[in-house]
Length: 400
Image 1 (tube, rainbow, N blue to C red):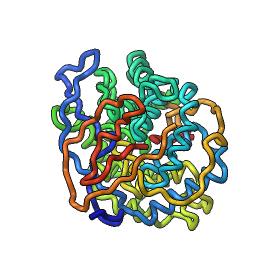
Image 2 (cartoon, rainbow, N blue to C red):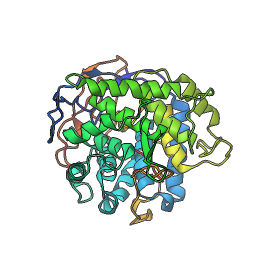
Image 3 (tube, rainbow, N blue to C red):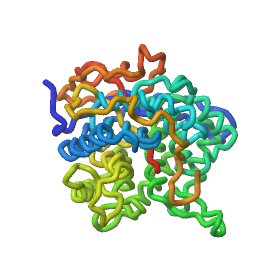
Image 4 (cartoon, rainbow, N blue to C red):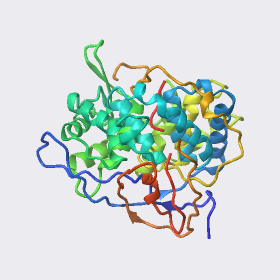
């Protein structure tokens, strides 16, 4: 018997919850081998009514004003709709529009990693995404600069590799640990202010998701320690109402709540706060005192409602709504490069997927990432959800 999204069900990630990384005691140059991942359970959409309202708003924006969807907004919107498990037809159109933008928007480890994450979620081959080998760009960039320009970009690079079952270079893994601040959070260095380290909740949220894909059987203890410390920082720095203070609290809280939820942390206060600020049209405001829905804020606030972070977000098709969508050709054919780093500080034709029937019996299975293969055999087709049919998968990260 199938279940509605109101039920807490478990599912296997279509693109896979990244396999654990086996770290050597002394971090050496080169790549590391992927260890067998521990069994992971992932809950389905946790706040279905509010999540669907936000997804409908995003789909409506696509239908009414596709020109506002730059490459970065397209990436985020794809991930957002994937988290809602709806509008798979709109996701397909967005992917078709994003593909030709890949060349201009995969210029470093973070930007290429974010696109590779999207490719994994939608079941596309990251080695031929819009004519770009995103895995090669990510790993080559990390070889040149394993810092990836800062924690935000580094987290995206790690997620792009792990979600595609690609080993993370050892030097980059060392940076994942060394870039953590003394307080446990991640952030950026203000080079213009005596190289002061500033903890950033957005960077911390993304790195928690990245660490989740690295932690598990065979992982170096330093990865587990970093994850524990980052979660502790997040819990200690929640405001009384339940959100994380930043220049856009809605999307920051969406990123952080989703990451912590995947880590098994109670985020009820955060999701209650998100539901409380959701506007009547289904969107979310960028500022606390705003009454206008904002695309970026909604694209990432929805992750907290749905309970799916960049480590686990998976497109499950078969529940597309009737919201009209714009033809992919009406979206911009080109876009200026969109950086993967926070905007405020200074750090750095696929068809709709087949429908899925999900068993009402929770299952726990070992999670690993299959080879992506060609487009005729997308990675998501390897995944079985309960007794369901096969799912294909559908963006990270933010940004302005």
